[in-house]
Every structure is written in structure tokens, then in C-alpha cells.
Length: 323
Image (cartoon, rainbow, N blue to C red; front, side, top):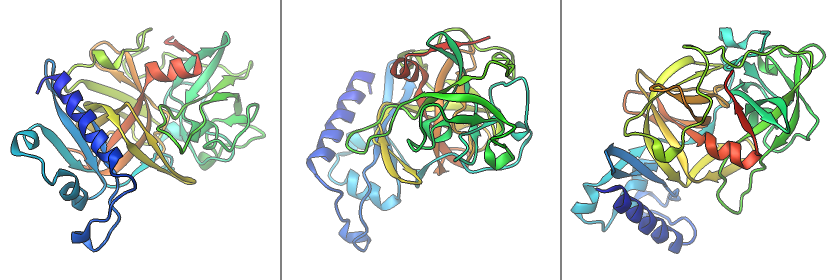
């Protein structure tokens, strides 16, 4: 269907879900509590899209789709992706070593966090800073501005006495009473620490982040992350609302997110949180990876979710640094 019609269908279904109040009980699945779905747009051609519906369990699809006519069902892309979690679990790889100069893809974290990924570099208040997730650099709101940031992260042997590289400067706090837009934080690089923003597979990224509205159907994208290294994927849905992400302290919901499928297996894994995702065609930075599922990908593994990078930069008042 046309992109505008897909957006209308998404809004209609979102309103229907909102009117339902609290999660309902599916009587045909033993009274299990039904989890609300994430809704987005899956591009299928120029100005054409299906409604992307992402569900925690197959039974949820039966509850959600009941009563929809065949014409609507032909225009939906329904996938069961299981639980979506913040990607922060450690797995040893070369990117987990202590490395100077700093570069995108390396293990990094707050002293109270296991490990995540150094996504890239930005300017905040005129100073160079590391960009990653709140749950990586700010310990999911538990940190305070001025706290140290380590490279490598503690799970990879990072020591506060020897491996401090930056100082937490700003982060967007999570909220439970409305949808979140970003999981993002920045830490100003300490003066004596060398860095190399453009050291990425294929060279530096473009200077200007791409707007989500400019993403082509099935856009090919890449990232380099602390756990899985350099991987290639394709954008499978945009403007995804209602992405419920499980963090250690609870579940937070995110709106207007980007969904990515791997090309040869999973695009990301635990510990890749904070990676910057770029468009292969022109190397324009596109998103900030923050969460994913274990199932639901077209070619095995799960799907990955990312905040639009332009939104991250706007929310935290940052300027992207390509090289």
C-alpha cells in the first residue's frame, strides 16, 4: 500500500490498542497476559510499505489480528521476535582489548556496567566526546555526570585506575510513563587520550547523518560492534512504535525506531549496544544500535533496533564528528 495509507493503518491500529487499556488476557492461550506489539513500516517499494507488526509470541498475533479482513492482512508484515533486550552481555573478541587511539567499535562502559560499544565521536559544547547508549555509559540512569568511562569495559578487564578514557557529560534519562525516543549518552574524552574517529572498515563515515525519511526500501547498512565486529544488514522497518525493551531494572517502551535484519545471520548480539549504523551506499551514519531480539530475523537470529542518529544528535544537542 502507499506509504501514507500504511501510516494511517498504523495510527488506526495504535488507537485501537490504546483504547483497550491494560494488556488483555488471551483466553485461548491459558490466560497468558498478552504483550502489546511494536508497530512500524516495512518498505516494499518506492512510496510503498506494509504495516510491520512485531510480537513477543505467536499467540499475540491471534489476539491482535482477530477481526481484520483479508485485504488488510495482505498488507501486514507480522513477525514473532520474542523478547527484546538491551544488548550488553560480554563475549571476548579483538575489539574488547585495551586499544589506543580510541576508535569506533571498541569495548567501552561505565565502571558499573559490563561492556558495550563505542559508537563514534561527537562534539558537545565544543569538546570531543564518545557517543554510546545510556545503558552503556550511564548505567541506565544510575550514573552521575562526572563519572568515569572505561576502555575496555569492566567485563573485558577495564580498570578504573588504569583505563579511564572519558568523563560522563550528558545522557537522556529513561521514562516509564511515556514512550522514549533514544537510549543515548555522551562522555567527554580526557585530554591525554588519543582518538581516531575515521578508523572504520572502509574508512571514515560521511559528515552528515541521514534522515530516516530518506531511507530507501531494503536499505543495506553496516556496523562495527564490540561483540560481533563488522556486520551487514538491511533496514526491515522504520517508524516502529511500541518497542518494549527489557532492561535490568524494568521494561521501557520506545517509539519511532529503526528495525534491521542481518544479511548472513544476526546483525548484532549482546555487547554491540552503542554501535553506530551507517548506510552502505554513501557511508552516511543512520542509527544508534541499542537493543535486539533473539528470534524473528529473516535469515536466522533476531532483529536489531536502533535510534535514528539524527534524533540522538538533536535530543542531546550534539554535532557528529566523522574524521
